[in-house]
Image (cartoon, rainbow, N blue to C red):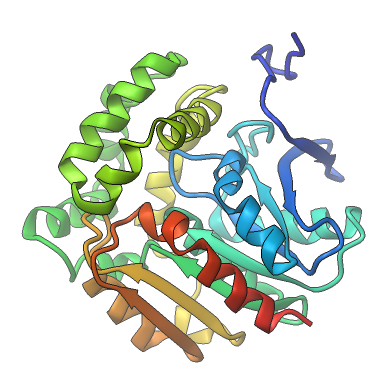
Length: 302
């Protein structure tokens, strides 16, 4: 068994690049090896393994997908005091180390803010930004969805210390077992219903999602807890200032991030082509519509 620097098992596929400060940044490389590159940023509680659901569609479209673990997740070392706006520098350095010039970025769910941050910070390197079931800025999140969800966003943004205590109760530092994660996924699936439930009733897909979530917890729960705090605060830039084209994809039955928020976000983006899928949920867009996502990204590759 190979162990990471933190002493956790390293059984899943992936590689690392070593950044100038000595930190490792983990990534997974799938799809067409010689194709135009797309840097994929996973959702909250997920990891680089999320990109495995895109591998076949990417290969068919002739795209190369490089999915990166964020600091403190999977194979990526923690970054003390990590901020959302630190991410573009890590990604640009990784691109340089991998010999990649221009590339697309894609963010799934909570990966969306990281994709937008890159598109805002380094537009000369980014061909297009794809947002899949993406988390909106806090100001939009506090205005959209059910009242209970809106109140949760207000509490998260105004009382981060309270949020930190609550998250520690639900996301302890211990590493959960695969069985615990699978049970958690099925409880969530029954609440989500629709296409998301159908997705998780597929044993192969449930296993892949459990693997992905297991990977994110290998270094404990700290990175995921601080990420929620980070994204509940102002991001440090306005999404209307993002100068590159944005492709937005969202399910009409998303119960985690309501489509109403996606529509508000699309209205604030400078160049946005939005596609809404009636009947799709939060997770199902990435899987069921992967061919659409990859073909659209391929059309923007240059």
